[in-house]
Length: 222
Ligand SMILES: C[S@@+](CC[C@H](N)C(=O)[O-])C[C@H]1O[C@@H](n2cnc3c(N)ncnc32)[C@H](O)[C@@H]1O
Image 1 (cartoon, protein in one colour):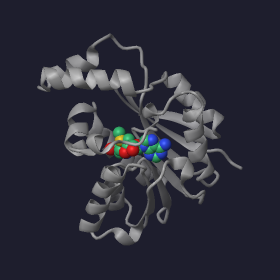
Image 2: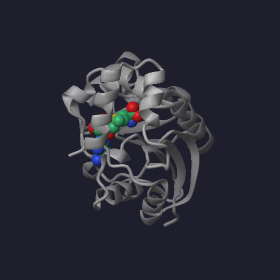
Image 3: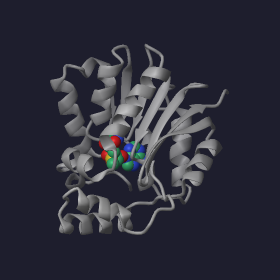
Image 4: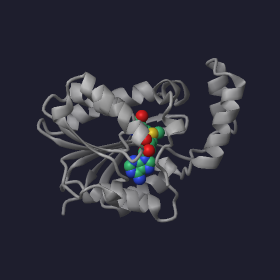
């Protein structure tokens, strides 16, 4: 089960921006690429929409877009619902509290999945997640995916980056333990292979900060 717990949802927004290299830049790039690639009236699938950070950014960037926000964690979704209600955007968002493969298989014109894939084991479940994305997209629809992958980087460089930006040693140690226990990263080549096997083509990288990376792909023609 890869849904976030209530504890993981607590303080998520502040924590992720501090701990994920390039989180804000990646979100800006996802938003810019969405503006380049998504149709003006797109039905956009957000897979693992979390506390609603990309939902809010995308809703502001594409006033004609409507969203299906799929998220299995009640605590993460409650936070997103609060933000969307406060922004007066309820009429543009359908919330689905479920794992992606349990969400209704309705077609969308575009999809975004930010920082979800590396929590899913590569035992058929990652392939299942990518297939569930493809199954909910129209032919040629764009996908923006960010993930933490096993790039060939020097040992300890992530911890070094955190310490150098002032994150307390105890927090860095806890984060390293969480990564070892919970994350399921695969090589960037494997991520591209999973995307291709699920029926995505034109898989192109647009971002990398340490292990965090972003890909733009298109659902293949039917
Ligand atoms: C690190 S958070 C990312 C949240 C948000 N996209 C962001 O970038 O801030 C990962 C989220 O994916 C959700 N998740 C995990 N497995 C999922 C699945 N199979 N389908 C949909 N969401 C999933 C978790 O509950 C969690 O809220």
